[in-house]
Image 1 (cartoon, rainbow, N blue to C red):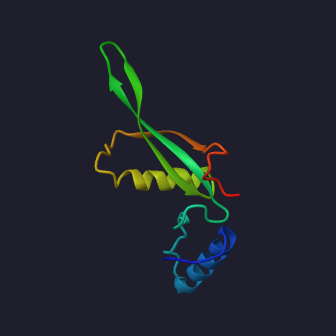
Image 2: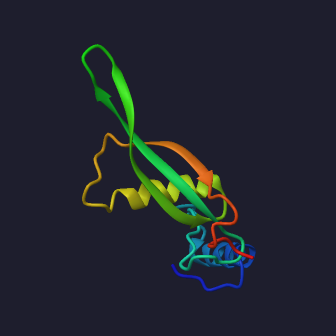
Length: 114
């Protein structure tokens, strides 16, 4: 479902209303992660999600960063869930990749919301 709203709070309220309308007395519907369809949507922030994998060396395993995904989300937990979905769409994705870190992008990079 696509919901157009002026900010994250209104989008969440609209999604909850739609969820209640679709329930029909059954509990099979749930509201997942809200995904902003445009960068800089009100209530969102830019996040960097780093994926890494463990590689076998002669006598040990070493972690190596393999990809950094940039996305817009309401919070770190949403960024983590969205990143896990998006990374699987990349042709170079490997199932062994794991999220090493989720961090809000540094301010002042020119892409933050004013």
